[in-house]
Length: 163
Image 1: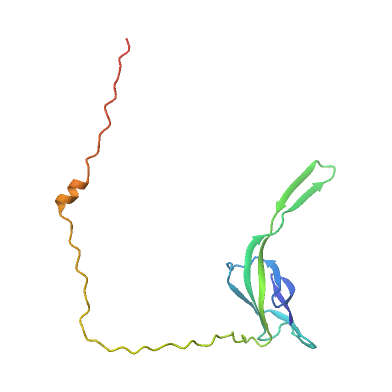
Image 2: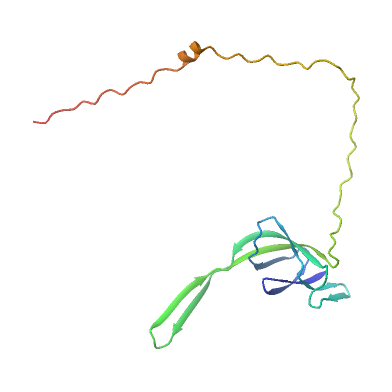
């Protein structure tokens, strides 16, 4: 299944599990994005073309990475004017992995693991008071005072008089 989506003023032809690079999107790594601007979907011999968009069609993608493109050098020169200017530029971009293409907008049911059987263990209900742990007693203040040693003072500096 192939789809043509529109994002960032450009159109991209995508398939499931494709990785595409688009202009920066405001989502973080790991987030899922749904594109509603789907222009065309092709599945085998069947082609659906929108006028201009296909209603309810969606393409779901995951943000793989947010980075910047390779640096380009912009060099401007006006001849015979002794005027030159060199500037570098790196465009922000987002790398996406296409997860799903849907012509109806409905998500396909995810694979659900079979529920595990739980073992039920029957126990006799005992009506006893819960056992409480003995409360810790506070240490006597005299013992705390012995543990703390008085701070030692540095010896006084000797000064000599010069004659």
